[in-house]
Every structure is written in C-alpha cells, then in structure tokens.
Image (cartoon, rainbow, N blue to C red; front, side, top):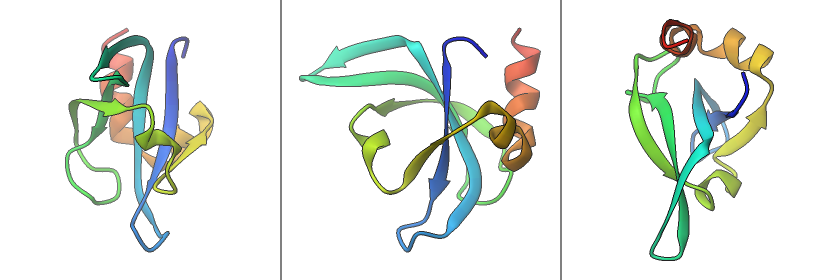
Length: 89
C-alpha cells in the first residue's frame, strides 16, 4: 500500500502483542516540535484486535515497542486491520 508504513507492536518485555499499527506517512503534522502521523491501531492490547483511528508520534515509532515490517507480514499478524484498510480503498 502506497503511503502506509506497518509496525508490529511489542509489550514492554519484548513479547509481540499480535497487532500492527498502520501509519499514514503522507498524513503528518508537526505539533510542539514533534511529528505526528495519522494511523490505524489496535483498540486493545491483544492479538488481531479491532482497530480504530489514532495518531502516533514519529519518535515513538523508533522505540523498541515498534518494529517496521512488510505489508505481507502485517497481513499475517493482524487480519482485522486489513479488513478496515481494504474497505477504505
């Protein structure tokens, strides 16, 4: 998907949650000196959770709790995310 980056989410102890954040890289603003992206993310910290619209700071994506992954891998981990993304096409 063009203009979307995918990040696998991890618990504080490094264990995968089973969810992915879809970051709309073309939709960003700078707020108080930090880049904020529009995104779709898990509603709950559980595998294949329902998703909701959200925003996420760019520097937060650089932490150990988020790892960039391919769209193919994201589809395997979080099918519900793609039910939403594919319905918005």
